[in-house]
Length: 420
Image (tube, rainbow, N blue to C red; front, side, top):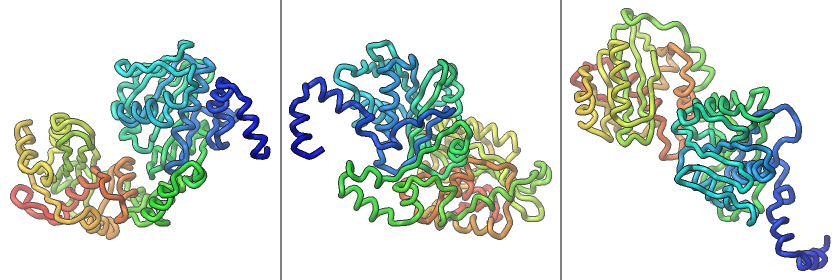
């Protein structure tokens, strides 16, 4: 339509008609932002680069279901409660912002619930508390940034609760990360995978943003992931390779066959991150065995109780604990909780990549075996490279580095300080 005719048509519209057009998502969405047509799918998995419009797509699908009363109970799940509120509900592309002015749902933050005038309700949950998702039932769900979720169990529980109505479904929106469970979800027969890039939405993004992020990320794996929306199995520059780690899994020795058994700990003093807890031992022939990944999130009291149980289970000889953050506090907490094992201090003297390189070299020399596949540990190892952005905390990998570093040095477990 010529510009003049378009302007004349817009001028002839009433306020109500303009509001309708502005909130008719089918007029504005790109094809990839619309739900799959037909097909026997349960999960619409939208994996795309930053700025693609994933949040808007997820919110619009939920709005369509709610305003048309196609469902009655909806789950909204983000990484944390703050993410649900600030992005999925109150954000620029959240449910409150995109609603038709006459159909804005009532937001009850104290009850963590949205209520539409037709009675449809959406309940908000945080993926970092996966047990909240046990029990409730829904007909539809929106799971946002699932690649960042700390616990795959949260997504499993969400799927198990998706059991009301004739055709319960969910949309999962995320920027990808090299995680096994995410790749398995993408390959599931009842999943429709849609992938997109940041540049597909360039017309609605600030030019400065595109230029800045392209310059910062370059053309490597992170750019392929963060901008291209590619679901990578691992980074090219990773110190560990997924296939090589899979080949290490075999039946472990019994505890009596180990000449030494240690527990590596990368503690979270504030309780915000995971605490890495890795059990490893060494046999008389010099082979090092990674025996258990007992890492967890929680307060110091919680992870220390787990550490005590693990120490008793394996009859460990010592605990190797990183002390840069907590210092003597870590030792005091362990002693107060009843952990009577020798505590070997581990102190980070170099960057993560430099500390990890000797451990990766031991893997390359075929000196390490794994007693299990350890999917979450494997994901962290295969996602770590010297080019990894600062601020990310692969706690399981750090604990592995400490415990294998201690076993490789062979120093006395009760007096020496491990420095890497």
